[in-house]
Image 1 (tube, helix red, strand yellow):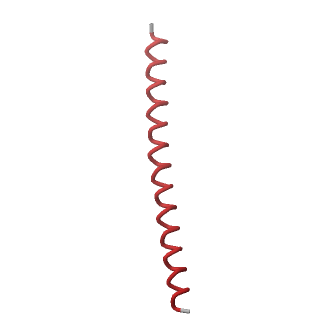
Image 2 (cartoon, rainbow, N blue to C red):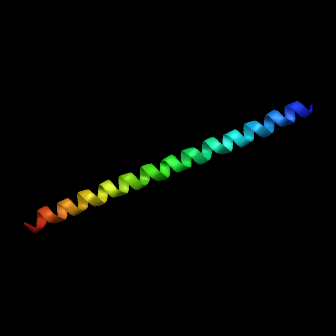
Length: 50
């Protein structure tokens, strides 16, 4: 019984690790996308000023 509980606890902890890693990756991805969008906006702004 104790072993089963231990396995469940480890599974839950690993699941949390995976979730937080996915969250972190998503944050990095979102930031990169945002920077890309800003770059495009700046470039478009420069072009429209010409």
